[in-house]
Image (cartoon, rainbow, N blue to C red):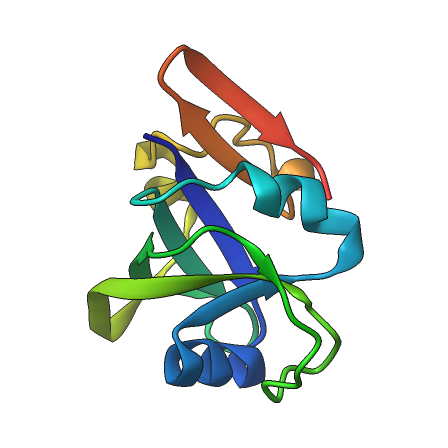
Length: 128
């Protein structure tokens, strides 16, 4: 099982929760196509909170759909997701937490904007 670290803006996070859908732009389609059912998505919401706000499970195979869900850009490569943990108090992503999260393998500050995941045979990192 892989764990995915999904980075989004606050306004898009509201739409993700509302539609129970995660989508990415064309440049990330290869990554989206690698997702499989029941993998775990950890959602990090950027400014102002800069915190982990929810944990979801992949609930569908990827699909292509250009229908607007209210995101700030077109993200047609999508999956359906189901909530596992909805945090009433977001967890700020500070230096201590970064060290404790096993799925974040490259903990250097300059690499914080990358999507990372864990595969059973080891760790792999994908840069956007």
